[in-house]
Image 1 (cartoon, helix red, strand yellow):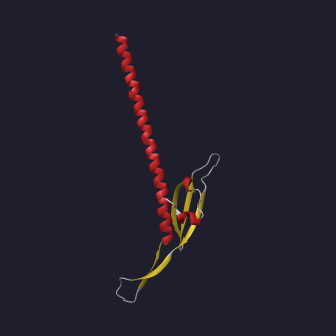
Image 2: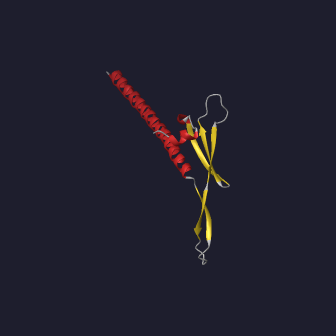
Image 3: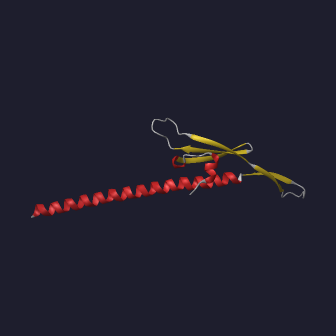
Length: 127
């Protein structure tokens, strides 16, 4: 995948994205991207991005037909960025799950082979 929106924000180290968080501060959403900790670093490196929330009036359910409530909405750009980040983070988890499965299969195979070797050696001892 191209990840054009993340690249347009200046995110260059896409292979090192570990996780992200989003929180609301006032009238904006703050996206924080955490990168894998490199050898010798004490803390994870991270980047912050702010996205303004849009607001609009919505007709209130009160008895006054002219009553409106102000609601704020997440930026469409943030939604797209989060979709790209979800793809990156999910892809990394899938790779890690695949690695763990292969490693578990390998350990199981080692046990089976070791058991079979012991069984054959026992047969040889009986001869």
